[in-house]
Length: 183
Image (cartoon, rainbow, N blue to C red; front, side, top):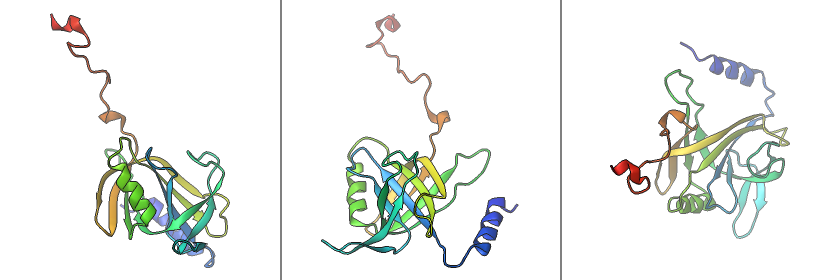
């Protein structure tokens, strides 16, 4: 069966003006980060020259963004792919991500997050190149899961909170904390 979203996207891309491109972005956040790590799949413009040339885009976040809401922030150029979540009744939707030639700041942040407790939050956004004042599509509340990394590539799955995998009740009852259980 054909995916109806694919048909809609193909039609939209075919009828879109040729001088306007979609800017795909990712935002990574972990409690160990000083600032969120943001990347855009676009060469963009020169953002900084020192200590090395940095290219990317300055884009405005949505008013409901978890960090820097409504502010214009920098997204650094990076080659990455992100697949749309699978729409199936018996599967929790996940977004497959891969980032090639990981920018230095992102690589250092991801490395630091491996030794600090907490989950890496992910926000996927799409902007139109002629409308950097806000995203056209936002997929937030994702958590990075099942990651692997090499010297040149980071891959992983980002998924939504799965309430079916959470223990209930979340309190663990044991004889040390609840002596009446030891009778």
